[in-house]
Image (cartoon, rainbow over all chains, first blue to last red):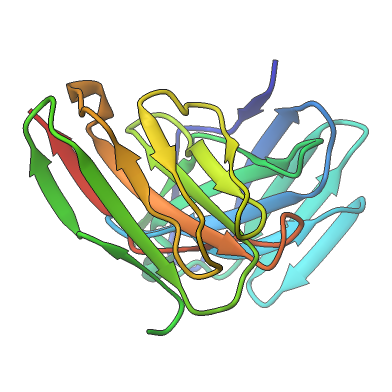
Length: 109
Length: 112
């Protein structure tokens, strides 16, 4: 079967760094996506990895290891507005996205 | 219109009633999707369309139907609503099936 695993909830302090992990088992692989979703809002695209390695975009970075079926999203210099759910999604062999349940990130002052 | 819109924003519906959720995008994206999002679960794909005139079934298609008469519109119909269809429904689009998806604001549906 197809499966995406990520922690349900994480807590971090404003100004700190947090790493949100995602492991996956899917039929085929056509890229891994990270989305941010604030409560009551729609998901918005953060990053995309299709090759192994680190992609950096401002305060956010995303890492992929295809051989390990593993990715992480790294958030630096945390701000209160980063409090949100972070969704990991993998493109399967049909280019459909398989979604994890999301990680709720709570930022404390 | 800028981006992707959905209507209604929210709806309370009696079980057994028919309901159509509307989705319109003005980005000329080929691919469109309907998801449902339930607490504790990931987004689940209901139906998709890779291009106008074609549709396909996702992970949870039962009880739902879609049509794609043109590029911009992708309505989702519940023929006879049941309480288990209570959920938040998101429409999304992408240039094609390989790229990031852009989401509409969602429709919160309650079936009583």
